[in-house]
Length: 253
Image (cartoon, rainbow, N blue to C red; front, side, top):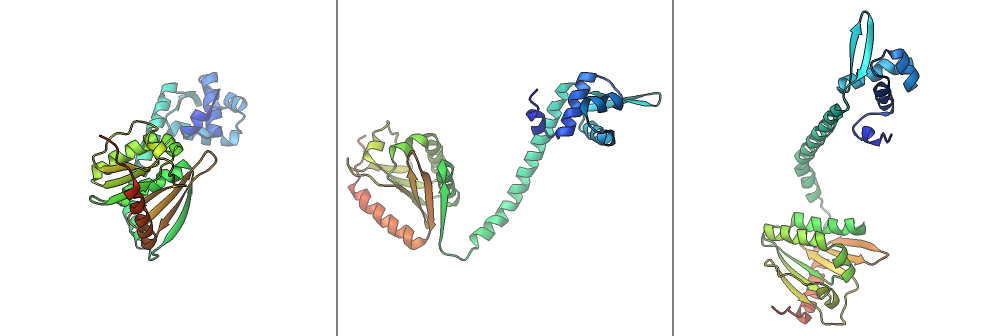
């Protein structure tokens, strides 16, 4: 039997062995249980007490003898409920400390930083950051999606644009020619979209927001992002964006 699910529900190795032994033995004293489970008699009561406290083992007393038995397996759902409650409590505790952690982060005196984020998750993190720090009326600029990035991140970007539109954030997006025509592009009320002339490709795609620039590379072998926080660099990349934007072609209605 695959016992991994029992471990995920919070039972340790000794608890699993005793619980499964009780299922097989039925109502029993500790003697047969020690033999079946191979748990030393010095530990058996401690483990049984733990299982009893979790509600999956119970006992009766006949004369002066304690007889233990496993409760119906359906009771294991109770362990899942406990895990869900603990997760919800942890989530609430995390939310309660996030504001103070954010304040400490924003109070950092450095005016610049450079980070390397790897994988598609790293690229998504950059866009998550831009969504988190941008406010209504702010504008974001993105240029040069390669086809592979558009394919791999298509579902993510659909959801991302719904979120920034809901926040009232504007966007300007400049696609590589091949990427624009890879699929039918939907109009976005919050975004202006153009594509570069055929034959012009950017070696990486770039996302500019606030004082940040994300320079992202997506190839078959490599997926990473260099995230730069520096206002002068962001302004420089925005100037570069505006030059290319002037070369961009507006999609036909």
